[in-house]
Picture 1 (cartoon, rainbow, N blue to C red):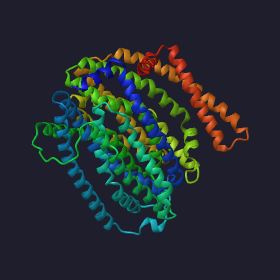
Picture 2 (cartoon, helix red, strand yellow):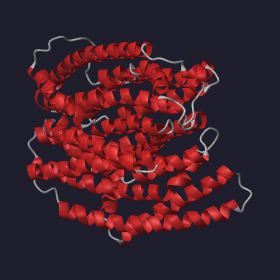
Picture 3 (cartoon, helix red, strand yellow):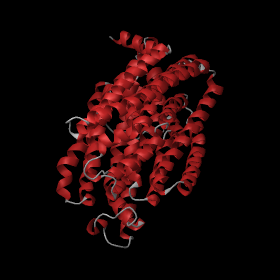
Picture 4 (tube, rainbow, N blue to C red):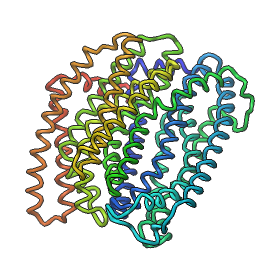
Length: 551
């Protein structure tokens, strides 16, 4: 049983942290490339109507990626695949994989064709001129029909990306089951690289206006989906996968995947559904609102992806093997360590974004078509999104724990109620908040809904598995909050000082902003680590030991 030594190494030698570090390292590279991509997108498209239309059109295939890729398909398939690998060996596991790939490849292809056809019919039924010919509208000048004319053709290009990226997500999950995390974690870098090339080289060929150039970006993303899928195949084949079709779907394990998959479609996709609802309602606020939410969300997902998403990627196969070997004590221990490590990273990240929201956005995005008004709108959304780092992180730990026990129903039952709560809060805040804060209210609704989701899931896991050590977790969080508060105060003061100092020099404005912001961030990290050491945060020692074991 080849999986046993691997999981023993993960658990007994701090391998979860190290494996998360591998994933986090590549994820950090991907996020850095994504940040470059977003800076370029902001420079070219700002918070324009074209950018908002792109955000909505791209959100839909991403939702399906969460529902049918990382959500339903991977989360239902990986525990069953890990069980087959653990108990019956590679041949049985790969046989199951070929059956699932065949079945869902055909299903995804059918969904893509139907979606593209329906979007074409909807375009044909819309009255009025094409917005690309009429020029970009102002914040209040574009009608919903004009915005639909922007979204639908972009949707027809981007929706097929869902076919490729769902199969990519499945391939990445399989490789993770073999404790191979590097290539899957590096794969998203390809999307960002192709996206950047398309923006710089392909997009200008489509025309001078924003409504025309955005199509070059869309076609580039579609090509990136194919590239990401192709690079998975050699690694899969080295581990025994033989490409091919298998229609022998009358299989007990296939039926188990199908039974698990239905509820899982919403369980891990709750966040994406909430964000999609936010962006749909944002169209009623103004054409700038979806774009402002997008840029704020990108800054949130930078720290979230570096560690929380990386840790969640590692946890699903780890939890699955603990469950297959009937070791609830190991699941509790893993939950304890994972939650403490997440809070150690995410609490100071959230505080940092709260304190430095406007300076960071001004440094990264404010140039050309991304104006000072765009900075103000995006900063307001980020201030409300920032506490969500903690809430989103909870779900990254709790949801895989349910799926590892092949329970996909509980998260979806909770998730349906969370979607309802999010919609209710969205409507409340859109009605009651001032106009240029309404989009920030949408961000707040998502954070409150996700916080509720995490708390309820944690309570149910406690009842089911026993106490994972809440007292120890709470003590760690209190220490982390103290250290983060010291860091936040220092960051606020240091940035004000550095900004005054560099503004009086001959430095270029952007370079002066970079010195002030990056200098503040570097000093704040040092302050946080020193405060954490003084408050005796255990997580510092655990990180040091895991690095020593890996060296």
